[in-house]
Amino acid sequence: MSALLELRAVSRHFALPRRGFAPAPMLRAVQQVSLSVQAGEVVGLVGESGSGKSTLGRLALRLLTPSAGTVMFEGDDLATLSRSALRARRRAMQMVFQDPFASLNPRRSIGGAIAEVLALHGLPHGAAEVTVALRRVGLEAGDAVRRPRQFSGGQRQRIAIARALATQPRLLVADEPVSALDVSVQAGILALLQGLRAELGLAMLFISHDLRVVEAMADRIVVLYLGRVMESGPARAVFAQPRHPYTAALLAAAPGSHRPAMTLGGEIPSPADPPSGCVFRTRCPFALPACAAEVPLPRTVAPQHEMACIRDDLAL
Ligand SMILES: Nc1ncnc2c1ncn2[C@@H]1O[C@H](COP(=O)(O)OP(=O)(O)OP(=O)(O)O)[C@@H](O)[C@H]1O
Ligand SMILES: [Mg+2]
Image 1 (cartoon, rainbow, N blue to C red):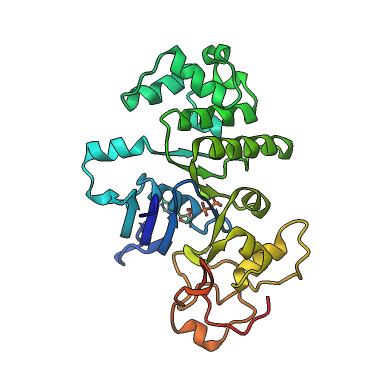
Image 2 (image 1 turned 180 degrees about the horizontal axis):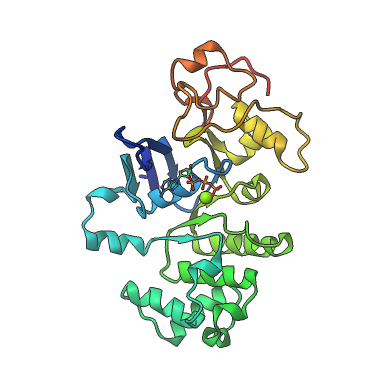
């Protein structure tokens, strides 16, 4: 059976403003990323700011076109679908963003916002359908007439989730869905997403820079650094025994971690001028001269567990 979502060696570059007559420099936001999400599976995408998480989420839903590589959804290459076929597929893949206020029109009632999405996809969009969508996230039928500003931040994120799920998607890309919320409110939204996942068999690409949130949500995790995958594997295995030095450093830096501290050298390089070979080598305490020569290929270290580092002698 094919995966629900599969990215094969996907890259996305952005042209930066040119200076003088030189060719426009390229910012490499995502480079050669392969990953898959199975039906009903939650894959956590982690990495520091600027590592390419949001770009990857947008590529997965074809809100952005890849510069290279292929994005497959339910066995079809999204690049080959006609406009109408792509629109039909979009029903099955939705996105939730960090800031629900920015994605909700302040002048429109929330019932109107949900009806609008249903109508866009040619689905029944009366009061009954809107009520079903609202109840699914713990809101009431009577809330439909209210405007976004009459709700708290957590409730607004519930509304954004209700709207995303109204078309009954099979894949939800959630980009930092709780990062803008107070910790006390975060737990409620995460529990809601867990419940919806069980109830609807929903698969998620769950993007977060917060490892505790990812640990609570994900079956599998993918660790990005400077647009490249450093490690991917079952969440439990990666948290218990990270295999890539960058993953070990991320886990050690997480609040409340009991892992030995790992100091990384220097700053994150610019994605407009990434290091040769392994992009992590300029900060890696274990780098060897060979790390500058070639981009390390991902290799399997345990079942379903891959990492891209040439060293296999590290006890992390
Ligand atoms: N439209 C664009 N034009 C130019 N550069 C872009 C564009 N979108 C993203 N980038 C750059 O691509 C890189 C990856 O950005 P992205 O937003 O995907 O990172 P992120 O991991 O989501 O970061 P954050 O945690 O801050 O949300 C960054 O260097 C960013 O500046
Ligand atoms: Mg982002």
